[in-house]
Image 1 (spheres, one colour):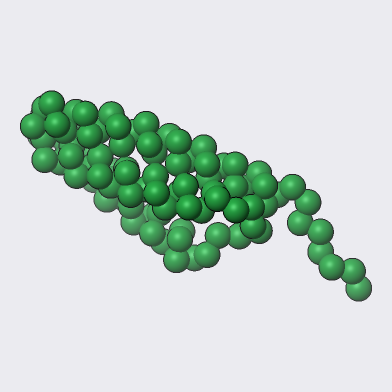
Image 2 (cartoon, helix red, strand yellow; image 1 turned 180 degrees about the horizontal axis):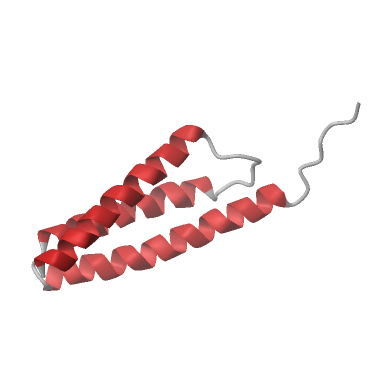
Length: 94
């Protein structure tokens, strides 16, 4: 029986994580700017949450591999949820 050939799927997955990290970095910059200039605590917290998401997603996209560990996916899910809640708080606060 031959070993399974993963093909290009791990590379495509790593590129997708890099795109996610880039979009999270842009979102973090916008939220941090809005939080700083608008004096909004939820905006600042949302910006820092997006910054954390940037770091985790960037780390996940560093090396092409077939799958991301469940702990990483859980961390990204938590960071995304918390960031979304704080972003909603920023919109309601402003």
